[in-house]
Image (cartoon, rainbow, N blue to C red; front, side, top):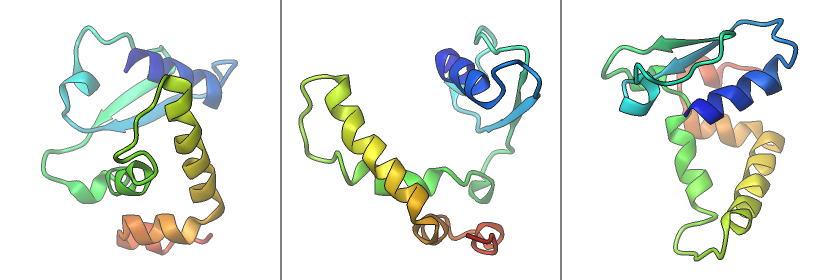
Length: 110
């Protein structure tokens, strides 16, 4: 999680000019006290039992679909289909809105 937060911070604000607020659920690795969090990242804890506030969760099935029941020799081989699916989802926002289905996301303009 620390590596992901660090990469996200570098990607979103490489010069540290932005404060990034990252919504997290109460999974242990999201809220661990010993987690190294970059200074320009703030974790905002979501209340328990609020799936409508966790818009990324419904996107797992479309991502898993490209790697389900497959074997991969290394991490790079696993990343290739996942990156391809992410790029496809970027090009098809209507699929993302349909998968998420929350009123506020469905109302977003493509």
